[in-house]
Image (cartoon, rainbow, N blue to C red):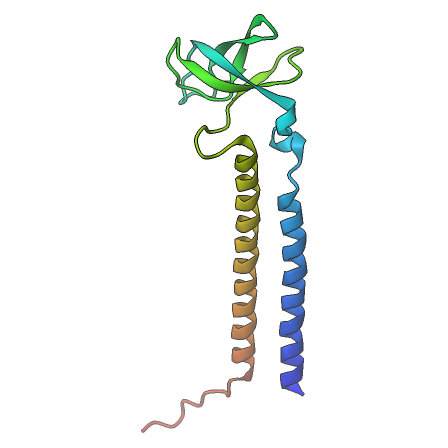
Length: 162
């Protein structure tokens, strides 16, 4: 009877971990656009020139850059620091540039396109989430096993000396 109860509790733990895993993966797969910087359709590529370099040691808003948007040269903050004055950077500019806005680094050039980069980021979040859940489950299982073993071990009698 005790063995059935033990295997039932292990099955319950595994079921709960599985459900938490499915929920966490679905949340990690669905990034919130407002939190993560918007969807790729809300950004457009551009080239910016650094006007004023910001020190990376101090907490600043980033380098000041000049970028051409819809035929007009506009100054904006770059989401980065420490670039040389006059350096040209590949950037992403928000589709809506009314008011103050921040210019972000462009997606990496090479074998990755912006879509692949987004997919890779999603997969990284999913795998990181699953690793965390697996680690948490392992800790729960070890704790449960340790508690079970300590509860069923016979008391030690140190009165007999050989």
